Image (cartoon, rainbow, N blue to C red; front, side, top):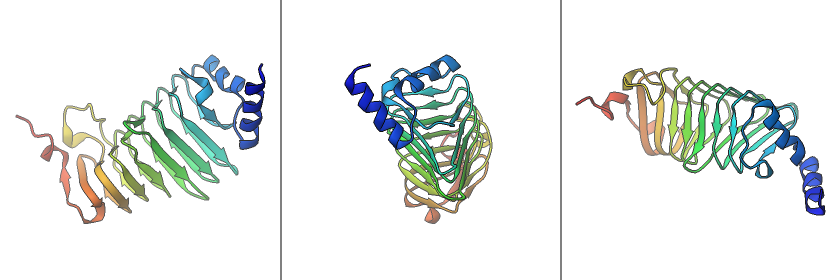
Length: 205
């Protein structure tokens, strides 16, 4: 190991992350890391088989924080998940951080749950406590706090009104509940926008 690697590992240790060797060894457990040197993972983070950690992903758990990520979930470049005395639980087959990364942060006593097949993209964030249901979506740079998006099919489901709840656009969403098959599109304050059926945006010909 050269001097650069030694210094890098010392910095990782002081910041509470696995060493480069320990990070690369996650691959032996079925985790997919195309570039282990750019990925930061805290000890104790629970990763199931076939999770994909693309370059520049950070999974940071501190002060008894808890992070668990289900089988086959993709964390795209620029995704950062932080649990500082809080909990972040992500189901199987989710897609997080495409098109600009994504920030997920659970502080003291806060819980963020993200269901199977959810899709979060476009540089948005989750903070405080949130429940993002199975198949639900956040599309765009949206700051989401204390929101609940209902369970449903994924964005691939042919019936829009059977998909999970959706927030799309940009701005701030606080304390909102979006049930299955519904969407709020806004560019500013989501609380002031109209909730519609998803078929409004995806009508059948």
